[in-house]
Image 1 (cartoon, helix red, strand yellow):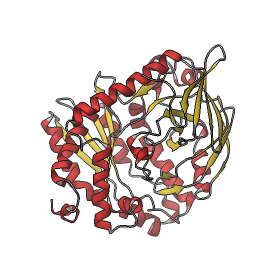
Image 2: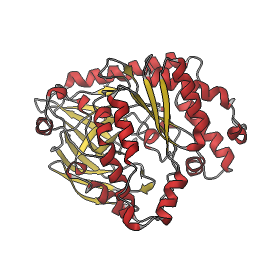
Image 3: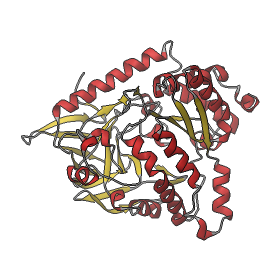
Image 4: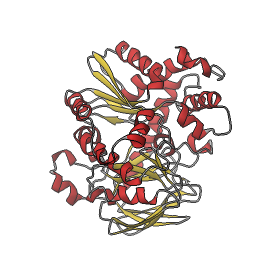
Length: 423
């Protein structure tokens, strides 16, 4: 693994830790089953050593076939710098077709994320959104399977040069990559004596909190914090989930490593007020910073941002559902990621450091009886539909959240960013 020689300044033996990381991904995150196929996608080429280890662990678990779809930042940037301006709604459809064929056959998915947050800084916002929108359109059939948990899937992080330089800008590039690997391993609890048992205990704790809120069946959540005064209605029959899900085939899996959230869907027509982001949003390689969104009758009616406002507005204009919310997630401010007091410019990590909401598509698994409903019935029940699903962070140590009961009484759910109920 000569590619990793420059990283040997880290406190761990990298090859050994990567093997443990790959094993955690396959056995705890994805829970890959004997005979399943596995597709890795959005994999940065410089993370090929990790991809090979994931493949090896997948075959050890009984995978019948493992393949990968690469996503290279350099190729993406070359397109923005040199491609004809009229060509940005083109996409290699064979990739989308291959993913759809894979999930229809019951294959598992792993997305390995590590793109450079500043890759498209200064690029034309219209072109950035055009590329993202076209990609969302073509992978929609695959996302149909993912958002309904018809297959087991997983998102993990990988340390890359571009991402590491953004997170640790004040140290040499090679040391930054080493430090980012250190951080990934620690946040995934791989530095502990028995990480598998630690993860099982952590998953159990998140599931207990989900169960508590499912018994409450609040009509709405009220948010109060700096720049935030928001009420989110919750549809009847909403389901809170945390950490562990079950695929349509009955395979239990943990779709994010790391994970600290419990989440459900808000009613698509019942968001009122203004919400301010507590962290920047990395959208397709472009940053949106210091932004807020105002909602009326569930729809985003105005936005403001110190950077990336045009990108944010274009994202919301992507389709009808993009202006509505599809997810609400609760995360304690005391989680390990939040306590690093570091911005990661990567949704997988930042969303597990702060409570958040998502514009766009809802996960049908968060609504009772969704599998038996038509698309029109889902919309009537409050379940949003969109090509996009984009999380942005709103939590902090100054955010309070209340639950509104059916009788109109209000109960504390979070205070100063921490859980207001004991388990």
